[in-house]
Image (cartoon, rainbow, N blue to C red; front, top):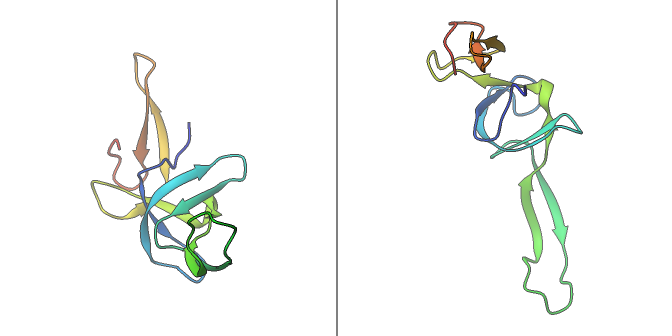
Length: 104
């Protein structure tokens, strides 16, 4: 079970964007990376390619960051925390905040 999913709010814990929060747009499990809105912005120099209508010039966009550099922000305590997995009696699994113990 992945501990970080698309749609989660995460906080960056290391790097140039340390302390910033954003929503996860995509999780790349093969590379152990996540794409977070407004975090790790890079500039891409895009040139015109034929008659295709594309954005031309210097484009600023998000780049994936390592999954180990982010922590999920708990919905109940609003703090960045590690997530554990709790298995219920019926076999269902759910993520649990390690700080407050609430099910997310």
